[in-house]
Length: 111
Image 1 (cartoon, rainbow, N blue to C red):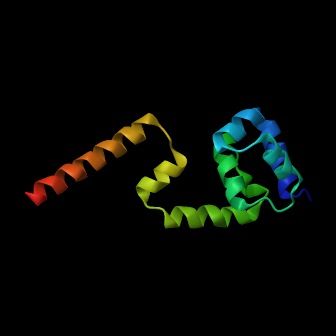
Image 2: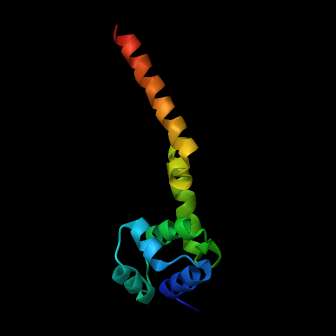
Image 3: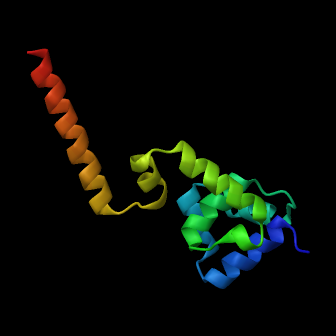
């Protein structure tokens, strides 16, 4: 059975997304990612982050990641879940408007 680093390498190659793009998104170096390919115990958080970038589901090959996903989703509220999984401009616009409304309400209550 392949270890986590080998699974990661295979997934990235299948995605067709350049390694440079992945490491820039993660603010890491290419060397760091190549070191991850060699590790049998790549951290689940790292796999989870790369999973989002390359749109790949590691849960079929790495069962432990399923539990990690469930934990993260349970610990995040609805807004944070969208931040984690959906970086669309529409989401951020709505987030900004919601915060602006809350701020305005606070100002009204102070008067």
